[in-house]
Image 1 (cartoon, helix red, strand yellow):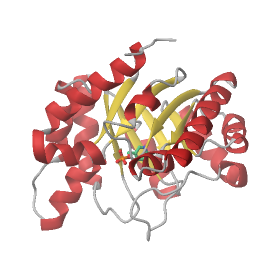
Image 2 (tube, protein in one colour; image 1 turned 90 degrees about the vertical axis):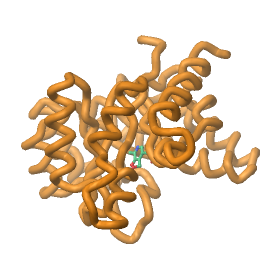
Image 3 (cartoon, protein in one colour; image 1 turned 90 degrees about the horizontal axis):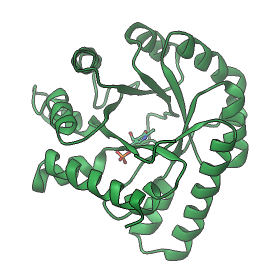
Image 4 (cartoon, protein in one colour; image 1 turned 60 degrees about the horizontal axis):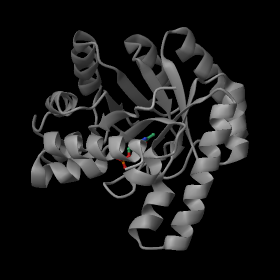
Length: 252
Ligand code: PXP
């Protein structure tokens, strides 16, 4: 296993800023180019059912741009027939299946693969057969990880949101417990042959313990980087995140 952790930069919230005004800027595809040039390995975008940030046209544009550059697009989407059709048409390098409720501000919990196994598995099969690498966004719960493995998905993305919130809130005990769970989840997933990704809520501080988990192969980070872009620019923020990931992996 390569020791390098891939960094996927999620550019959804560039679209959030654009949509606040209903104009054509800032352009998420331009942000994607900046992130790639600064050391991102790929670009992640979540086409939500309500299109609150990324639009269908953004996905068309990003997919074409990334294909031309030979860089991966990781399309996050809900498990719906509408999204399946879009993903089958674009055949992105990766598809991450996420739970989605319209009223939530962001993806608040992981997918219930254990409970929804029968309807999630056909999505995994169709997307995989179409050439996309399928990832399931789940909590680090052994029952969910085992269920994910039974769907035939190649990847699980472990939800780091609760850990990152606890760490940022200064709740050291909760953060420590949640980190132990993430480490155990990553180990279990890898033992079942799943590639392990992690994401949600990661910032410059929380990236270090997460990137140090040896089984983690990829991190997907968005909101914090777009926030930092206001102060230092998306390129320098991506470089800083990349540097911290590499240092965590080197044990620095
Ligand atoms: N991974 C998944 C599956 C997500 O849904 C999100 C949020 O869209 C992220 C990673 C990135 O989270 P954040 O924007 O908090 O860094």
